[in-house]
Image (cartoon, rainbow, N blue to C red; front, side, top):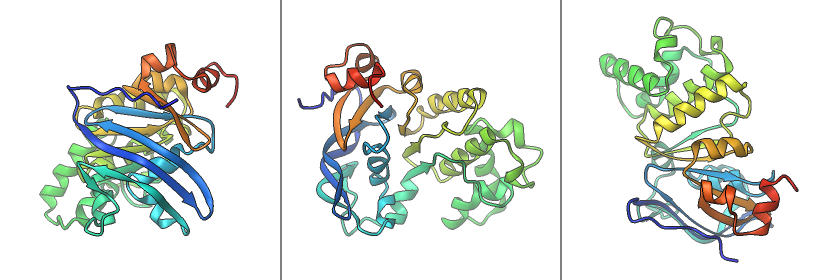
Length: 262
């Protein structure tokens, strides 16, 4: 059965993934993926471990380019109509437009301030007053400013796990990307920190398009507009989140969300 992917006249398509196969060496990790992400929506990728969720996520900003032998062998990935593997696309500029938040928070061994202004500095911004404004705006956007404004020049390693993850989100949004990719951003956090990050994700939707991998199906129901279920490298079903979890159209989806496997 062809995965169901409803369209909406009220949302503009931002990411178009068309018939994508992806391999690590001779091992196929993705098989014929077709998926569209609309502007300013949150899409969740769910499925058992090893099903291709994180692989597809990393295809969107070409992070897989850094893995020897990893490559897209068929299909296209377009952002705003531009094929991201075209020769004229600079992978570094692509990754500025498509930010990434990883499973484990990875603050740089520097101050909170230096973590946030790292990207803007690389982009050539040197003026301190401008950097000060960027840091404050990004930390406010990550719901962290009130907690750290009096210790900006202390080590980021002194923050709690949840604060470190929000700092990494602030670092990502400081360069004003269009898209945020999140690979299980709450898997290492306690329930309270998870709730704060989920609230933050919902607020960020106003400015960014968000694609997140999660093993937590309850999290997908809480924060995502649409959910894609993957199994063994294939996209099985893609639908509005409420529909997919209440009336899935594929047996594999029903079996997974009911806990029969995974």
